Length: 448
Image 1 (cartoon, rainbow, N blue to C red):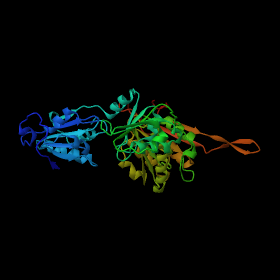
Image 2: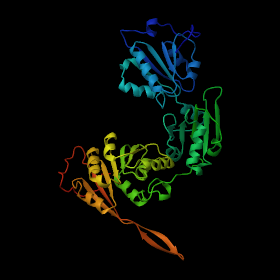
Image 3: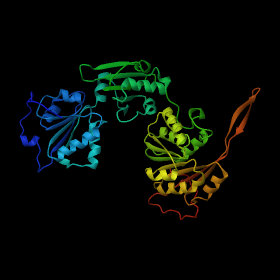
């Protein structure tokens, strides 16, 4: 922390007790969105405060004063806790954030911390400001009402989602700059080499830089952490739907990958919601859960595989599919299930001798109205699932698939695959009475 000398820009007069600790009262937390610069209004409020939290670049722009500086760096949550603690001590505290503080910024971190450490409503004031996205789109004369907005600040960017959007705007950061992101997108989908894009850096500063080019050229550039990547519709190359992808798309051991036809049928029967929690149990290569994650980016998908060495296959497949909402776990399923959030959908692709116990534990946690699809390959697993919870079983599917293959001299035949059975279970809605165990539920399609 640094104490600055006498202010060069004198703020509006205010009693000293407004700026320093007041043991008998809560202070005030000002969260100031600064756009792409430092507005005079934000500076004036900050200069009336005893403590100012901001990036080093924003602190450098702030006129000198008697305030104490706190540079926000790599641990913003810790800084948020400290700022809130100072407010509780009666201090006036300002938090300056570039762009819109509540859009992937320090304001969002503060809002999250305040949920667990609330201050009186009258002690917190969020001041709005324009986002860097808005400024950039106005620089370009680009209508952005149809744009998909992303951030590479907090976690790995969802490459598939970004490329699937005809117009995508991505905040970059120190972990992945705009040019880094261009390289990652190109490595994931080389067919997007000619996709039109814009790289922007240091908006609103004398070093502002804009470059409109193709994704291939963008990947050769060097842009800093305060940069943005815009993918434009020109040159858009669609990705294939992540449903029933061929075996060649997956890394797996032996035969541990669900066939494309079974995968597509199981996911169709699961009626995937737009958000919620999905369990992929006995995940193997992770193919079922990963396709669910790609189809529904709002789902949090948890894949559990008994053999930890298969996690490397799951991680490689996740990276190849470009999704970030999949979490692979290794270990005994019955021990792992209590560690997972309650599911809205479940796929059981394995379980061995513990299949009945896994199915029972899974359905006990399934949300009301939730759907579970269990796959039976062997006669033993078919027998277990045939006898399991007939009160919740909505239907059983028998899948016989055959695929053509050449046998020489221009001749082909249909080669049959193993017969697969899918058992579809559904929990009743919270308001509906549950069918007593041991009785058979009426046959019906799972609710859409």
